[in-house]
Amino acid sequence: MSESQSAANEAEFQQQSQLEELVHGIIAQAQKLGADGVEAGASIDAGLSVTVRLGETETLEYNRDRGLGLTVYFDHRKGSASTADFEPAGIRATVEAACDIARYTSADPCAGLADAERMASVIPDLDLYHPWQLDVDQAIELARDCEAAARAVDERIVNSEGGTLSSYTSMRVSANSHGFSGGYRTSRHSLSCSVVGRQGDEMQRDHWYMAARDHHDLVAPEEVGRMAGERTIRRLGSRRLTTRQAPVIFAADVARGLFGNFISAINGGSLYRKASFLVDHLGKQVFPGFIHIHEQPLLKKALGSAPYDTEGVATQARDLVRDGVLQGYVLDSYSARRLGMETTANAGGVHNLSIDPGDKDLSELLRAMDTGLLVTELIGFGVNILTGDYSRGVAGLWVENGKIQYPVDEITVAGNLRDMFMGIVEVGNDVDLRGNIRSGSVLIEQMTVAGA
Image (cartoon, rainbow, N blue to C red; front, side, top):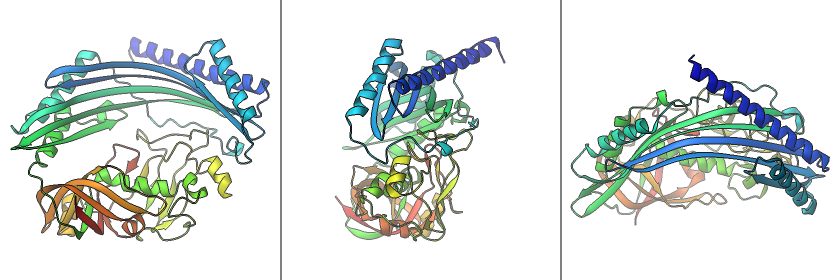
């Protein structure tokens, strides 16, 4: 380890220790004002983002943000406040504000800290922190290489929304009056590019990106740019479709949206409000028997990993769907109490939701579908979690005899999530690892495909 790296590590250790001292002090102040439950958190975020458009640097942004927040409980009455002022007077005013708010709110018997026995006692190292020692000139060059590769794909690419490189780090510390205290550092680096193609009077845009905790895990900027360019060119010559019933494949990068809808339907807030089509479905078949959906919060270097949720509850691997049967909901402590259940460590959301893939890649899924629609982009909103009704604008590619024939746009796909989930035929092995939901392409037996 170099002398500069050693000094940086020492500075970060000191910074984390200072944040820990800060949140513990906030908790003590709130308790002195009469709070019987307190949770507090503090964070420091830093980053660099560069966008190059048409070969010229268009934006260069540095950010360094900090903040702290707390939630207090006075006999099940809740108050919250936050600030970016770390001076003693600012902190004191924030604590007092939270306590004042709690004194004027109505008591809710389900409000309060998560149960003490559920707190994380050991904070595993998930290898989430990989800072990128990148200067501005290097960042600009990488973004320029990314965009240049996209523009070089085809002479029909006539404009660009730019190539962007972003690199961020974060340090977060949390504690509560149960005695929980934890903190860890994370990083996230990404490369993206979006370009515009023209053919006659028609213009189309598409993009591509990569993201990872460790910049060594990013593909080359030229590869990101090439993908953006090729995706744009394949959209030229788009046609509309007449309304029909047809099989549909959601490409891996949009398929995660389907499973995001599933998570919304089994989220505690939707369930205790009776606002989900999956109310009272625990232990019931909601997917075909080959579907396995599970959380993997402790994966090393993964973008959705976390040792504990935002309430300090220890995360652990668990099944949400096994053999197609719903095994568990997505609950924080409040929604769990409303439902007479226990938290599932999902305050703040799920962590690395993983859908087990089958053995076919996308080209093999296309052959299995034979004739139908490959969806590559979702447009707008049209999902009713209460009823499960689903209608989204899409762009994509029409497939016949297992081969892509031509691009299509200005169409919608419609169905009901209940039928769509049960109608999944296969999940591809082209798993997209760039986010918190990790899925391959999904083939659904039949949906309504309608012209705009």
